[in-house]
Image (cartoon, rainbow, N blue to C red; front, side):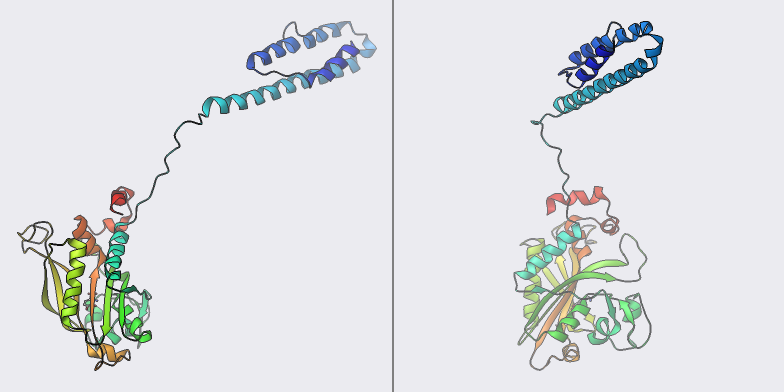
Length: 340
Ligand code: DAH
């Protein structure tokens, strides 16, 4: 009996099975009703009393080892069948969902591209600014109501308070302080105003500011640049018109309208039956603004313009509720995939 046990113990590790059927046959051969290990347990009854303890222990070792070996063989077989049955290497891969650029980024990049063709480079400035760069250097006198009109978010109070910039015109000032003419820059960025959020207004929005300073820059240059921009942005047949306006930092100043791209000037509810849509403010840089930043206003002239990116996006896609641009609802954003 002892030799039979020893022989089986030695054999077990070398027993193999290449299929579930073979494994089951092996299990039955060892541990089934008529299996060799089961038979040894039957024979155990005849073992002499003084040997029972030792043989019993050996038998238990054999039984455990056989069970463990069969389980290990089963694990290997199952791992193999899992990969071979469920992995079809010829299947197409899972599509990786692609993102979409935010509509405001699309419009901003388009505006930048258009002005790059005219030789403009991108300039950036801080969003947290001081009063001097947002108002003072732009010819807003100290008592000017614009600071209230523009509903400024103040960070500090005092002589030159720190605030969130209300327009990107502040980047003009920063550029004029460091660069010398010719200056031809386009300044995209976020601006902040203390407005109640609604379909038509938001406390955060985006602007693009443009500035061109050189010798002999005229209002005709401004008008031609704006026309070029409007045609590139809204189509070759678009018309523009300039209405006199007022900004402290430009003189003369104008507001630019484009002919309504929806009704082609006939009148609709988008253009409020005027046939025209306002797209930007502009004007000749006030000599005071040039001088404040150390540029000789006798030698140099320049023009500036500023537009809201949301406004251009609204006109382009007819999305009239501004809040859509800020809520980042994927159902809204994914519609712009093809607009890249
Ligand atoms: N800064 C003006 C605003 O926020 C926009 C603007 C108007 C910018 C006229 C200009 C300009 O450069 O010439 O409403």
